Length: 185
Picture 1 (spheres, rainbow, N blue to C red):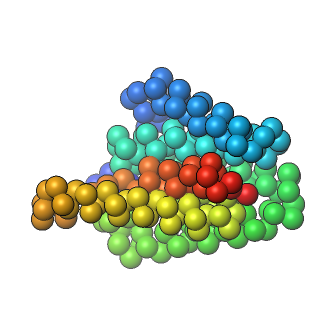
Picture 2: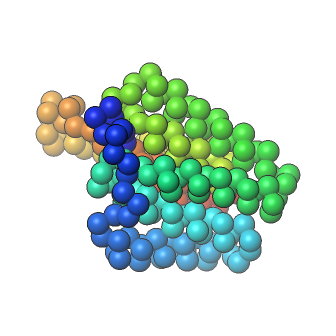
């Protein structure tokens, strides 16, 4: 859960409390993406977006909020870069961004206490970045959050059912795994 009715009035912070450590991790992840994909205009977009994903995941872990002021401009920049750098892939990335965002947007509308619109906006960014590979990224993210939920349930029993987990970090890890392991688009 990233945004609930009680926290909608306050915007998400633009930086995590451990900004230096988060910056270091973001830089390492960005370099790893460049190492995996080589140096090209699109791989620079992928690397920068990977760093943004680390940053917003850290914020979500701390606050249970994903900052619109980072996620939405990043989605716009990635979509624009897709149009400029690969016009043939642009339609795929745009449609995947809209589909992934709509999928989680509908889920957030149906279960607003369990899922936030920030997660839907993050899915929009992931679709713009990964294209059809967004399915892999989302699946990895959902499997990771389910695994953590099962571990908590095994450790804590029924009280674990009342806990909430921020989905953003799991979606970010799913996207990063897709970029680094499956190759991304």
